[in-house]
Length: 153
Image 1 (spheres, rainbow, N blue to C red):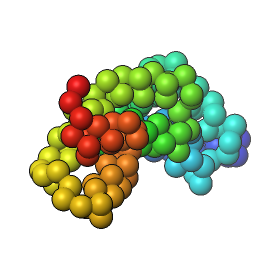
Image 2 (cartoon, rainbow, N blue to C red; image 1 turned 180 degrees about the vertical axis):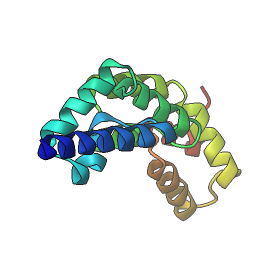
Image 3 (cartoon, rainbow, N blue to C red; image 1 turned 45 degrees about the vertical axis):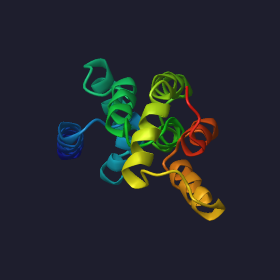
């Protein structure tokens, strides 16, 4: 009997930990499982995550949407896709989030470029520097070429 009680208390502790993490921000299922791993067994964690998903307290789709919104205007769609893959979000959800983010890539790249540089490159070194900056922010090559090259729509 004491063993069952200890297991029950540990499960309660896992649920509390999970809800505390989810109260701060959205998490992907894989990310939450990784954070809970030191505190419980894999089967307990999987059951808890299934329960949280059924109760709509955990959602990879909501996490992808939240991350896309947080990164919009500052980073490009390529970086968003990379971050979502790192967090274990499914490819279908990544494709949806990236498709939505690509619509705003050109405008976001222009804003980021104007804030950082504001003037067209004066030589090849400056052009390369501006390219690297925008590529590092995760904007696609064609968008970077249009922004740094000064191409209009």
